[in-house]
Image (tube, rainbow, N blue to C red; front, side, top):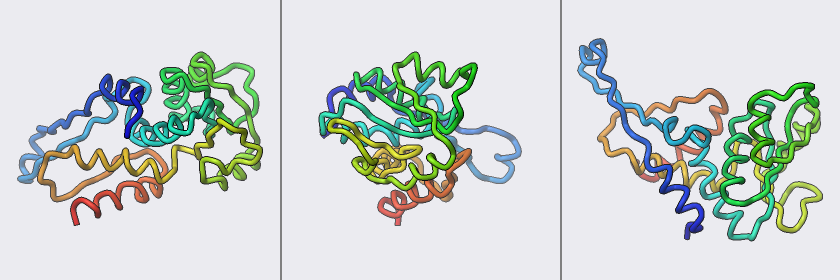
Length: 200
């Protein structure tokens, strides 16, 4: 069952739209091209961020979590979305940031801190070690009420949110392409099983 706070947040976000691309060169090929515009869901928690965070946050709230700890780079969209949703849900957040302490913070870090995220800067070797902790309670020295969220929200719970994208496609499609900037393997791990469960 989805937490009431998350239901309220999701209602504000709504469902992302499908845009048909009406370009002559596409029409000449006798095909239709549609784009699912998750980037328009919200200025901060857009794209795949909400889909991956939704059921992770639900699990964290069910455990009475008071702080979520995660990791990312100095320009991390994942940490950006987490800090914002943490503020909206009343959950403290901490980001372990792969960077030296900057003399001047960039706009992403400025947002994180303004939304209440506690930032800790870690070395590249420390960051590599953090990548080995996969479960929500696997971070060494994690305290009661704290929840560890691996880089980019890479947890099995993210599958549930990503699967809902497939459920929202009201089209009889022949080919589905995933547009992404990074973490191709993660998207393959998340989306392909969802498609197999629903289409194969």
